[in-house]
Image (tube, rainbow, N blue to C red; front, side, top):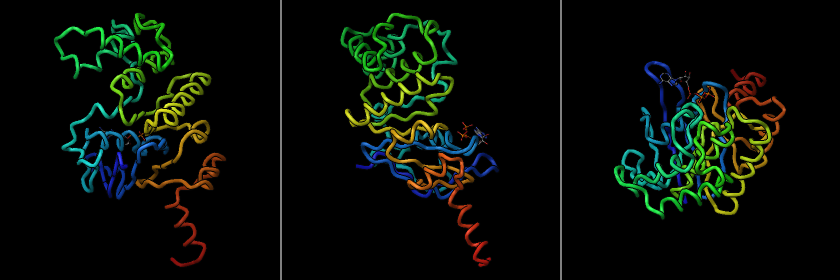
Length: 251
Ligand SMILES: Nc1ncnc2c1ncn2[C@@H]1O[C@H](COP(=O)(O)OP(=O)(O)OP(=O)(O)O)[C@@H](O)[C@H]1O
């Protein structure tokens, strides 16, 4: 089953083209990493997938529906870049942050019921944060905040989790734990995961596919290319092609 279908999209800010003719599909159960240099457009691509930006050409479908008409947003758990860390002084507990994401069920002006509290606790437990439910988020470490962000999207029982550089500012042990946890929910619960990351060295063993965005085009890396990327020898196939043509003297 196709969860995300991106067909031949192009996008640019004002007069600055970011990418063109980008195609990819995310199927149910995939664990996909998107890598690419700083500023190559990874966050922009996620914003297009989430319907926050509109491509100049091409089409994006979520769960077989055009993104512009898509309404079942609770199926998609989006963890933005930096997440809570920029709002950590907000006077709310971990439990309140998680419950707030149930607003479509609770209603904005109503008080949460026992069942909502229980759902929040289940989600916090899933990420190993149940003991911190009543803790103000300002008292949590970066790794704990990140786990609250994961619980915040898990509470809606999404079909896909979309993460934008979830390891920024975290220490090595926390990063390892996060990847193991993502691997577990992908394998055991079948949650589909799409993750933007710089961290190919740690992530490649967990993901099923790696997409690389560079110089305006997106390609899926094969095993050999992943190996080259790991040894810092990667060249985007677009460039490799140009190099090959050069060598053959065909231009
Ligand atoms: N709202 C905007 N208006 C104009 N230019 C933008 C806007 N947002 C991003 N850009 C530019 O578009 C390019 C792609 O940005 P984007 O944040 O998508 O890249 P990225 O690959 O996610 O980068 P990073 O790895 O540093 O997070 C960058 O050159 C950025 O400066």
